[in-house]
Length: 138
Image (cartoon, rainbow, N blue to C red; front, side, top):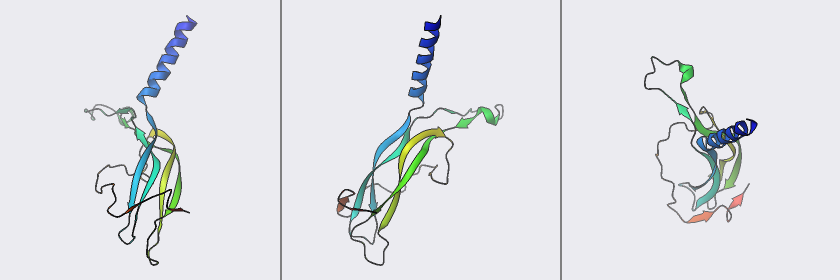
């Protein structure tokens, strides 16, 4: 009997990890300021993945505690700051961006996350690119 219990427990943990697959993921972003001569390409990590969500179509019959919408969001993160090369003296050349250290499934916090995904800008450079490794770090 204990062997069956142990196998069931291990199977449940494995399925739970597969279902809540929310992890730091590599992401490349391009920083393109109109006033600066170069576009900076930065490799960072963001939180991405699938989280279990429960939202019934019959909201009037189900209590609000039975409904939840989890998103893959930052558990811990740090900010890094880089200097965009080729900026005139009157333009602040520094850009800060988040780096995901750990991720979790939870409610979206609008203090540091964009909870509505609408692609308003494209993620590409319109000027000569300079990699973060070639750029300057602060």
